[in-house]
Image 1 (tube, rainbow, N blue to C red):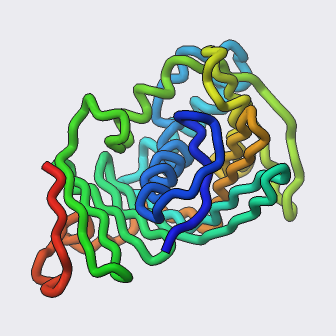
Image 2 (cartoon, rainbow, N blue to C red; image 1 turned 120 degrees about the vertical axis):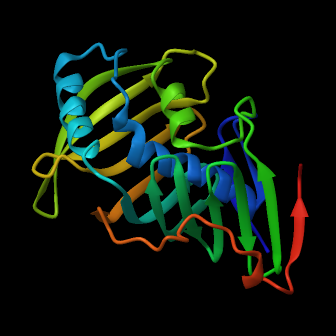
Length: 238
């Protein structure tokens, strides 16, 4: 089963991709949404924007773990695409477990496991820091700490919540993304949503439905257990 999605990082075109490929891209967006605020934002040109991000950073650094339920939407009116999915992610440091569309993606610090129950298949790959598709919060934070300028944007009232937006603009003119808007709840200083707008008119939005911290996690939360999948085909990429 395949779904239609947007490849903003290569040819800036709309293509049919597998559910696993979409999961890889979404995991990057989720890390951006929940962990972008850990960086120092040394590149920020707007002092107000930097001050707010620093407040969010200070608060999030106190959390031992983060559990997020989210909504993911992808829209492109010119291509008549309007998709919506729900998922959740659990993060602790660089470790994470992401669930979306029935597929689970788990990173234990050394390997990434993509578990697809529909196909009864598990794909295992080693983490390679030089691989652009390898996803970890630290790597994404390093990426985001350069190549963008930050500016104070609009304040919106969303269902009684004051959401302040910070606009991130890529400094590379070849970047297919026009801008990224990061929405922060003024009261809680937690991230509310992230909106990525492509130069091709594609709009991808991640909205946080539930943001919980310091939750009691199973000791095996980020551990892959082969015994749970006796009939699954194991595809080792390395």
